[in-house]
Image (tube, rainbow, N blue to C red; front, side, top):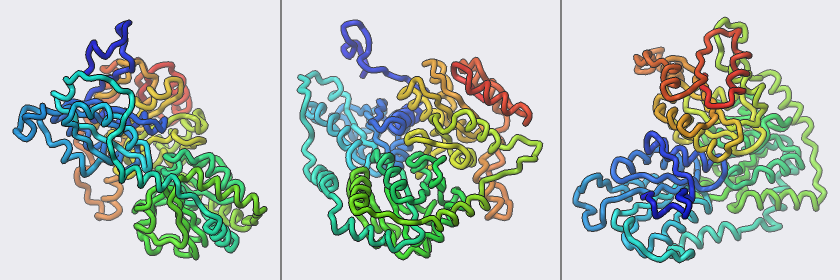
Length: 516
């Protein structure tokens, strides 16, 4: 409840309360804030349908290790279980998708529960925590203590064990013994590096020992995509040269990655020439879950990478991988990303290249889910972590727009662009009004191919071209009118190839919200 008692003496709220179009949008905004900052995002929703509307973004955050806290209303404690008005068993529902759920039945525990929720969300492998607060607990008035946590002894012991588990000299020496024997080492980097604030440590490690780097979809930005050592993204939608590098590598070093099915589709034959596979991660459950390793360590990634680099420097380890680099440079040349540049039609890749010419890898980019998402991952540069915000493991359509809103609130002066698709943006298109209501200078690009393009592509490839539900009957939407109706002063349709450079420049330089 947000009422006058929560305002300061000047009648102002102690923190901004953002009112979106729906609860899914609210929770994805919290996720966008969290992804862009590394801090905990917060969503506050009502009971019943309000709470159940957050299930998808909560699962999305769990799958991508994003720290948020969702505070749900609930019916009074004495009527829980009676099917009261707007009652939902949210603790049971969320128990299978959230990192942790807290149902507060004792008002005296409320303060400690909120503080504990933030602790759980941000420690270890980050994730979403749900606090289920009955109405009578909400209405309770008590003393604010300013300290105190719930007793979660086993959880804290596990976290402490990871935090205190340092690389010893024996393990470090064994790692470098494998690296010295290698002629084709490769760093396979996932989102755990970004979540662990280990990007700087990773870059120092890679540069010191001249190790090429391929990232997962969630790892984009952990390593500068313009760096000579970068192979960009690997996996199903990654670059051919990154995937060939995995094939050829004799020592695969996984850092904050989990060998997921979009990367290691056939785990037994993933990195088939790797005599050794090393794995560093913060989550012990990921080690050996999909692919067996010859060396692993569970601990804090930033500290562990620094330990490896420092040890190698003290030992004056200098390795020559110039032949491997030359081989990779040739793969980059032969299998460079490309498209039909002579087509009279506007190719989405061309639009993204033009956007990239202006952003130079410094903008915050959010996406929906589909072909546009993968084109953005392939053709845009990212110089730093937390600039690429996308729904990876869940692949949730409708993510891009609300995530951009959360990111823009987190970074009011930065350029934030949502690269979206016509099918994906429909899912949360009501949040266009949130953009203009709060005067956010978000730039929204809709690559409109009139349907679910990625599913349609798969139907053509794997189901003999039999299309079902992907050539959308929903062709009546005029996105320009929709944006204008929600208050966008700049809303333009780009349908001529010759206009692309000028239109993109005008769009990006527009001072307020813009829709293209």
